[in-house]
Image (cartoon, rainbow, N blue to C red; front, side, top):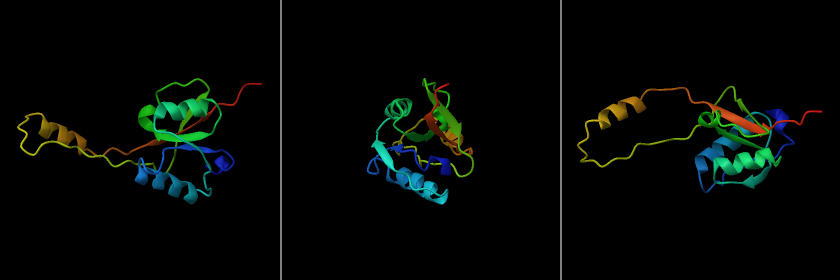
Length: 124
């Protein structure tokens, strides 16, 4: 990741998701660089379009790794993944027969993964 020192970061605004933002920044510093934020975006599509245009690089989640963007390379990050805390919200008095199965399925621990998106170098 130190190779990214001179490449600007495309990031979400801190006010949109403060823990994710702080986590990204902390991991960058741990890896030996302080990111320069080129642009703040609110969606994955915005970030990928800017990466494809050569504005900088972006962090994203594994679930987007199957999405193909022309000129964009998505690579897994080894080591500590970026994590977003999630929660299941439902009414206390709900009488669903499916809800206990959903809760049980969500409690299964899966090692989270994060990916890095950056512009593919032009051939030639």
